[in-house]
Image (cartoon, rainbow, N blue to C red):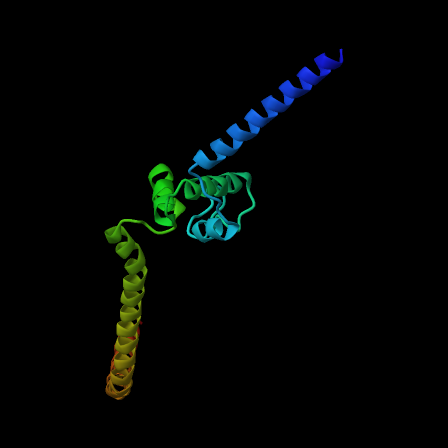
Length: 173
């Protein structure tokens, strides 16, 4: 019986030794490298949450963002650069994950359009303001001139009206 225990113990030790050797060899064959949280957050700051609006992946606490951060970690550990990881997400989920379009022409249009629109509005407001201002300086003297011209005509026409009214009333009597 003692020999059976010794043989069993030797077999268990041999199996454990083989398991340890195969685990260490398989760990060395794994091409993945350890990725720090700082590396994951550096890429996650450039990506936006798929669920929330205008919240970056590194600050969002939803389950979807946690899964995306895990994906970022896996892609980085496989040897992808941060730009490749971002491009991977853009290809799979569209430009909305990066906030601004990746295409240089679309990015330029998206970034320049608000400035051009704002400048056009300011120019329009300035033109209207200067027109009002120039009309205001020219209309004040013209209004004074018109009021002095209309006073005699208005009085004269009022007197003519009264005279005609009285003559019509006298003719009916």
